[in-house]
Length: 206
Image (cartoon, rainbow, N blue to C red; front, side):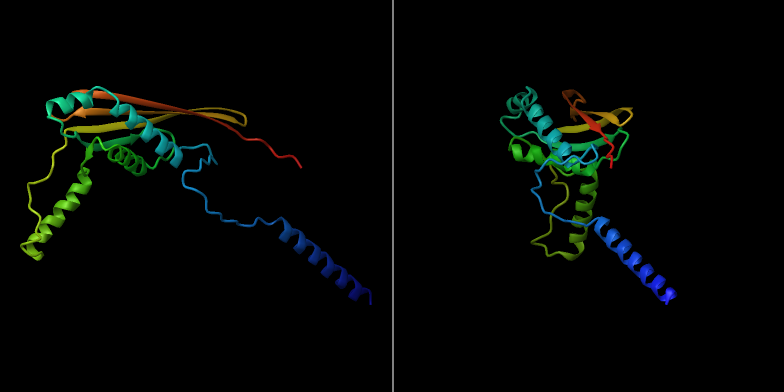
């Protein structure tokens, strides 16, 4: 009888432990939010930084005299820009492809600049044209040698500096972009954008 009672109490204790564990276990909740919502979880470079930096720098770029000079010398034609290498020199992962897409989007959405495909994209397009020569109808074949050459190339880099003490961290980002005249190698615009983030990690006491 005593052995049965001990077994009964063991089962009860096990049930209590299981209930506590179930109550304490994290529950995954997924919520759809607006893509423009600013959320900083880790304090690292994120989609908001990419979008805001690219938009601000392109606005600054298009408000400088080079674009007026180009319009005068080309009789009102839009400048043609290609976005070249944007290098990540920071201490963390940065989605450079996303940042380049944000720059191209900001240029195109301004309505003042034409953007041509990058070197990698051009290779794929040229391969498609070559393929069309053998398989597409004569009426739909796209000709070689009709690509639009870029007038200017944008290049740049992203750097970061971290300062940490205890549970407090400051991360400083600096984005530098350069617009260069492809024909003359003249740098016609230098842009810079800085971001500083304060991250505090607080201990939770029970």
